Length: 210
Image 1 (tube, rainbow, N blue to C red):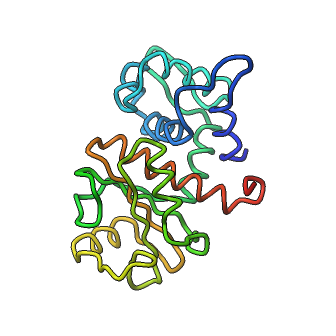
Image 2: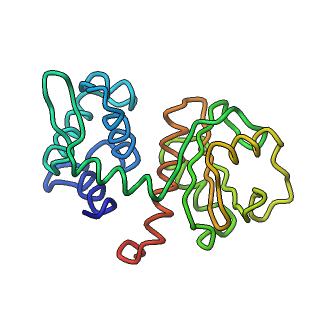
């Protein structure tokens, strides 16, 4: 089961209706929340995602159509297929909220590491724009050479505390990319970073490269 194809189907428009009011990044976050194994309900998921219950109902319906979740009186849990899809993404990315930094514009920041994606990065503008489209206030892209982190095209050094935090929590290796989504809203920061990361993953995948 290809995880990118699954997310693509979950957000696909069902003609002649309108496209769903959520993105692939929201679908991925929903799988992560459900995968935590606490048997969350629709109302709880709505709160975790910052989406209306009607939108979440549609998302849950798509998950059920793809056989990714099971729903019981105890709440939603992932099926073996859902676990497989989530595991595939966890093999590609690492993610964590991070303390406010001096290199971002918002008060809440969220970092996503994309493994081996450094060769796809130019100046980080594409990742910033994708985060903005997703509702974040911006995004900062960092490259790793195995020893240090830096912003492509910039001579600005990261503050030591941010560098230490990212190295300890995400453990980047040479060729990895870290995208920091930023906003005054923590969900927007996370969705912005994950949206940029998912686009980058698609650019690395031949079947999604055009």
